[in-house]
Amino acid sequence: MPDTRIENPSVTRAVSLSLRIIAAAIVIACINYASSLFITLICSIFIAFVLEPGVRLLERARIPRWLGSLAMVVLALALVYLLIYGLYNQLIAFAHDFPTYAEPLKRMVGSFQKWVGRIQQSTSTIIPASPEPGLPTIRLQQGSPWAHYLLRGIGSIYSFAVTVMFIPFLVFFMLAGKDRIWASSLNLFPREHRYHAEEVIHGIGHMVREYVLGNLLVALISAALMTPVFGLIHLRYALLMGPLAALLSLIPYLGVALGLFPPLMVALGEYATVGPFVAIGVTVTVVHFLAINVLTPKLVGHRVKLNALTVTVSLMFWAWLWGGLGLVLAVPITAALKAICDNVEKLKPWGAWMGES
Image (cartoon, rainbow, N blue to C red; front, top):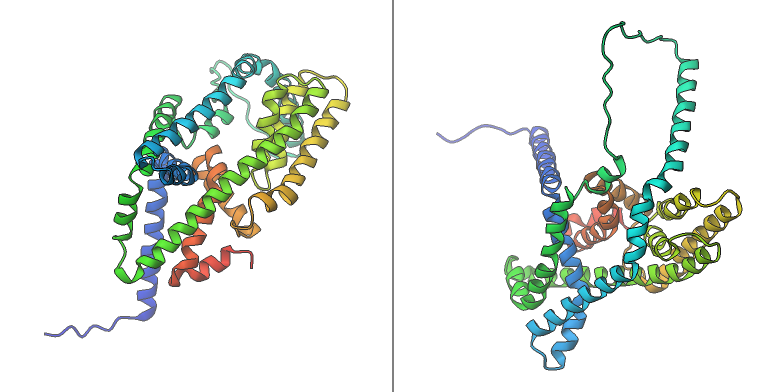
């Protein structure tokens, strides 16, 4: 017998919406559970996009693509090694003295907590019951919340080290096998949509290159401006604090606060007068606004066309999901998602909602 059931459109829409919500929850759970894998792949893809022009340039010079890919990966590793080698002594000394510099901050936080506790006691109308005599008191001591936050997306130090070791190999394979990977990726789409998909991938690659290289250049200029000031006020670890503050200040909206934190923490253990604190605050704030309003538009361009609400929500979401690394990767990931939405007909309203206009 023929099926004579009549489907209610509202019920169908509700079921469809429920299935989409469940699917989104499953995707988020998978991204969270396999965070180290996704972070490794995303970082490798971004690095491959950045190194691709160099490989292409070597290929034009009649150098085989696999050899050019190997040369670019080795060059990138050499630059990272030189950076770490140049800051090694300061990194080791700062790690050794970190408990000393963190102690004033702990005292400030403890004083603030006591002040909040006194306010709660004065305004509370419920008197908590005192523990019965003779019963043991159990205190739970938590680990460092900052370390937990920074390692949330990468797990333990061991897993992070293993993950980082895979990145150069992944980048090399992506660069060396680009033509095959490119053709195989386009074959995943119907023939009539392949040209469109190619344009989208090209746009994402160009955006990532502009974003990463532009922000790296902005960070170098900002560090070159901050470090001499830190040296003039005789701030310890000035060669480390300058680049660190410059990198942290690149994070949208939170940059000033994050950039101020490392040098001010060191200054708490060094100075007893207000002058150096004012110098650090003015320097980081002025350089941050110079970078955001002058350097970033000139060097990064306007490829990342995300409105303020989208950037804020993306920072909150990826920081909640992956911790400190989520803050760093939030904007390029969201910009790549917007590029996809702008080029897929059904998703264009979402792309317009995420954009500046």
